[in-house]
Amino acid sequence: MTAFLNIRHLVFFQALAESGSFTRAAETCGVSQPGLSVAIREFEDELGVKLFNRSTRAVTLTPKGRELLPVVEVALVNAARIEDDIRDVVASKRQVLRLAAVPSISASVLPQALARLDRSEPALRMELIDVESDAMETLVREERADAGIGAGLYDPEVFGQIALFSDPLSLVIPASHPWAARDTVTWAELEGQPYALYEPTSETFRSVERTMLAHGLRFAPSCTANYHQTLMGHVLAGQAFAIVPRIATLKMLPPELVCRPLGEPEVARRYTLIYKRDRRLQKRFVSNMNRLARQLAYSQTL
Image (cartoon, rainbow, N blue to C red):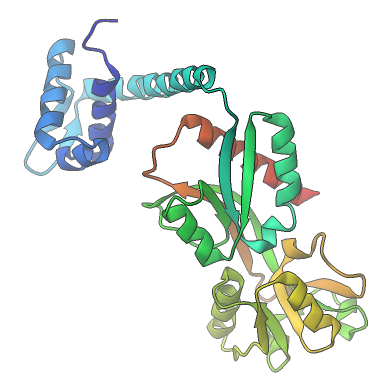
């Protein structure tokens, strides 16, 4: 490999190919536009081929540039793996990752998923932060958490995202209630009934509000609570039903209560693992997050 084939040229080439703009590519790479232009010109001169068609409106790849792009992408992935291997050799301390998660998942399938990840990755230690949806997003945005798990809609320009699984909203009622013999309870049947929800900052609250208003139903929760146990207390006392994610009932439902699906329509929330996109992260981090995603998907089926 000669001196001109350096990582800097490859990174600049990929950024320009993906953005189609010297300005955007320079911003992505954290360099000046003139500096990036010079580097691309050097790369083309050394290769002896023209890689980009330049015009006042756009920058596009030439046929040779399109042929080169997948080769560069593979080279950069391999370079990142080599860097991770080097860092693993140099680093002597255990890797600690801070994970913020909403209560519905942090108290159900997440602990066992983390336990399995800990057994398969002994050099990794996860610190769990149990917070509501808005707080989770803020922690990740401000880099006070390395990653987060929630069921909201997250800005793809800000957050890298790994889809986990979908989970339907369900109704928790006393086992003695007539609806306990039903397969499904409809949203229309809830109108006029007392029901409790997580606090308005939760994605569950927002999902229920959107669903009921979209179907012309009156949205009037009788009470809200921060914690799952508080909601179950309201149901046990006969004060209200509780609308919660199904996953929250898997391991935390008292025997006096039952969980029934809500239908017409079924409303499912998609859980997503997020991390800040522009943060300087090792490929090993993303690899561990993908491992955690697989463990969560497995735990959710148990």
